[in-house]
Image 1 (spheres, rainbow over the protein chains, first blue to last red):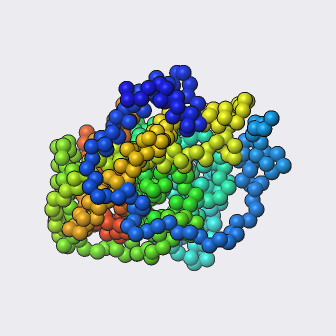
Image 2: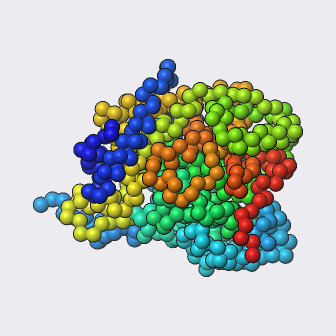
Image 3: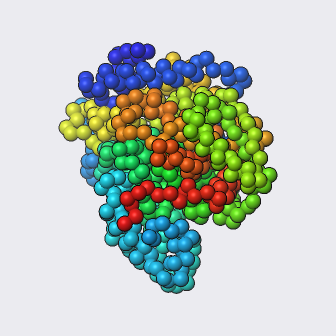
Length: 96
Length: 485
């Protein structure tokens, strides 16, 4: 196993994912197999190739004009939220 | 047998008013009702909405309007946002998500007069090669319901193969249109990166994701891609370049076309698969094309490269699902961290969590250079090799998949074996190239696909070559048994 149980718990914590006790052994094994698999890249000769920035040569992402294009639709968007009060998203208390 | 007609034939019936779009829509809705329970290809429908759209198309036809897609039904992959309709992306996370707007692809095809019959099942967040990771259960292959249809656009592919609609949309990040098209005996095209807007298409790996089309044939796919393609100011990666006439280009002769055979794709290929490709090459040669061997030495690294780049981007993109603004929220969170962790832990399935964690790992301190930067350098190398190859040939040809459709459950416990399904398709995504899969024969009674890859923005040439092949072969006309009554 290239990854330990502690490694996977740390990765899950960084990714904000709860992993149950039941899921852990399978997750350690499958993530290890994936890491072993992609380790094939470590011996790849890449010469002077630079890290790719965009699939189309010479293109970069456009910036849009700094103009207001949206109208206020917060009620429509917040209809999908699990908990809303007075137009605000409700989460557990974060400040004591 | 309306479902066996091409969209050209259907458009003819519609504009001559021998058939209404409402009748055509009812025909396909009845097929879905009858056959979908055994395939699980369609997961959301609103028949009243479909019929209202069909009536509106009939009204447009009544006013003398014409168009190749006016009144023609289609099914959208459930990764495309549809205003007022659930858009789940195959995930428990979005099981209760009603999109507040239409994806540009949905909007453009609706404006062209196409009728949405429903939303297609898919691998969760488009992560999978068998359509077994969906929260809504696996899709089955209409050629053999004990087998997978491929993925991630498995519902779109199975629906098109079983003739639930003449057209379905899909997305292709590592082969998710071409691999299921091959395994279900239909035609599927992934255009150049940036050709079709990604606005409203739920993001998986933003430097690879691209929307495309499933159809019975290249001739049916051409007008649909035509309507989907083109600049969209709402997508920062959309390319502002004119869209050529894909339909007109279908008729071009292939005399003198140079087709490159990817040596890396033929190495170790199942001899039965190689024989199908050889037979296809004979057809292309008879059409006047020349063939020659081409080598892309870095191509065998495409799968490990992809499984660093795509999970890295997925781990960033999927961080938006936090249980706060939309999507699944866990019961009784004890604090904010618990809310994030359990909402995501319970809302995502095993494969999605695996990819988020892989991405988190390769981007984490101490590993970023060794994995992510290295993978992006290999990706550049692969892209450069493709570019050099297209200095010598017009198109590249190879298999779409190593094998025909495999059994449900066969590879689900072994992620790396599953990932290797996409060994022939991933290269085109890494380099942003257009690529198409179309049927070229059968192995053990199951359809197989051949793949054509072209240089950037050569969709017209890819569709042209596929159409000319389909004029001289009938593999694309074969339909799975049991779906005609």
